[in-house]
Length: 86
Image (cartoon, rainbow, N blue to C red; front, top):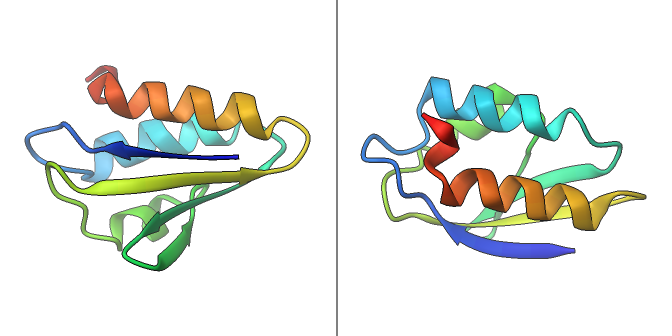
């Protein structure tokens, strides 16, 4: 399962929203990746996500494989679209 979303936060994906994303991702059994411009990073690693250097309006694809992949992608895409509730 995968879904493409846009980062809406003014400051992009800095430490705080990356932490929120990872905390939510760790709730799922599925393997989760965040893909940007052909680069895939572990969606359960704050350092991997911050290493992408994502800014406002960057498009990311959230990809999950595993038993709860659909729920994981939907929850994470919702989190991104709601600016990580920050």
